[in-house]
Amino acid sequence: MLKLNCFKASDIRGRLGEELNEEIAWRIGRAFGEYLEASTVVIGCDPRLTSAGLKQAVSEGLRSAGVNVLDLGMCGTEEVYFATFWLGVDGGIEITASHNPADYNGMKLVRRHAWPVGEDSGLADIRHLAETGVFRDQRETERGSYRQISLREQYIDHLFSIADILSFPPLNIVVNSGNGAAGPVVDALELRFKELCVPVNLIKVHNTPDGRFPNGIPNPLLPECRQDTQDAVLQHGADMGIAFDGDFDRCFFFDNTGQFIDGYYIVGLLAGMFLQKSPGEKIIHDPRLTWNTTDIVSRAGGVPVMSRTGHAFMKARMREENAVYGGEMSAHHYFRDFAWCDSGMLPWLLIIGLMGTTGKSLRALVSERMRAFPVSGEINSVLSDPDAAIARVSEHFIPHALVVDRTDGVSMEFIDWRFNLRTSGTESLVRLNVESRANSALVQNRMHEILALLRQ
Image (cartoon, rainbow, N blue to C red):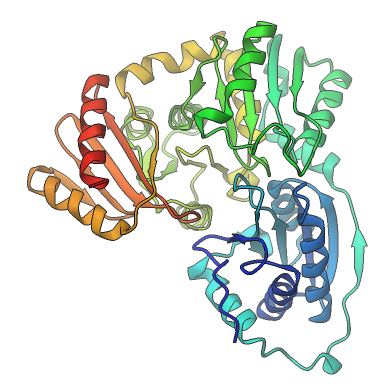
C-alpha cells in the first residue's frame, strides 16, 4: 500500500517525484471517480511545467473509472468551480500548487455544485482508496470519454452579473498575473471592458503564463514578491494595483502609493459592501485576525461567524449558514452568488465598483480601519517541534487571557490586543498574527515577545 503524504486538510499538495507524480495522479483520478460514482467531471490546470502531464494522468484515471472528462485546459481554479456548478456535473479537479515553490504541484477537488472535498468531506476516503489501489475491475467499467471545452465567456458573464461594471469610474489599474493562469482571463476582461466602453485601463505586468515563473513564484503574500507590482503602480501613476497567485483564486491589493493592503482590510470592505445591500446577513471570517471584521459587520447589522481556516472549511460553513460573503485574511474571498466558492477575480471588480459609488480611492477606503486595528502581518517560523513551541507560548499567556479559542490553532484575546498561532495546512510552518486596538507599537512589542518564546 502506498503512503500518500500529498493529501492535506483542504486539498492535495506535494513535492514532485516521490510525493506526487503521474502514477499517483492516475490513482487519485481513479479513486475520485469511484468515490463520487461520477458520470462527468471537469478538469483544468495552472501553467506549471508538470501540470499538463498530471492533468492527463488524472484524466486517464477518471476515464478508467468510467467517468466522462471535460477538459478546460489551462485555467484558474475558480474556472473549474464555475464549470462544475454551471454545467451541473458531478465534480471538478484543478491541477495546481497555487503559490508553492516550482518543485511542488497539487490538486483542488470539488463535487457536484462545487461542494468542497476536504479531509472531513471525502478527501480521507479518496486518499484511502488511492493508497490501497483496490479499484473495481476495469473489465466491468466502460471507459469514459474525453472532450475539450471552453466556458470563459460564460464565466465572465457570471462575474459581471455580480459586479456592477456600470458603476466603474475611470481608473488606471496595474494587474500583475505573475506569469500564472490569470493572464488569459485578464486579456478577456480587457477586451470586454473595451466592447462595453467601461472606462478602466489595465496595465498588464507578467501577463503571459509561463510555468518556469521567470519573475518569481507568484505569491504576493510574501513581501519579496510585491516589488514588481509596486514599481508598476508608481511608474504609471496608477490608481490601484492588483496581483494574483498562480491559480488566481486569491488577489492582492496595492493603493495608489504602491502600499500593500493586507487582505484583512479587504475582507472588512467587502463585508460592509454586502451588508449595505443586504442587512442582517451572515459574514464568515477566519480566526487569525477578527476585530476589524467583527466591528464592521456588527455596526452594519450583520452577523459575524467564525470558521476554521482553509477553503474546504470556509465553504462548508458558508453553505451551512447561507452566508452572503466570507473572507480570510490570506486573501481568499467567498461569495454566495458564486456557489459559495472563492474567487480572485470578483474582489477587485467589486472594489472598483465601490470606488465608483463612493468616489473614494482605495487608500481612503481602508486607511481609517488600518489605524483603528493595526496588524503584524503574518509571520512564519520553521520549527523542529511546532506543537511544543505553541504549547510554550500558550502556557505563558493563558493566565492573562480574557478569551481563549481553539477553532484553528490557538487564539487569545486581551483588553487591547489579541493573537492567533497555528500550524499551516499546506506547509511546514507555524504562522503568527497579532492585532491591537489603535496601538501599532503594542503590536510590534507583543509580536517580538511571542516570537522569542516560539523560537527558543
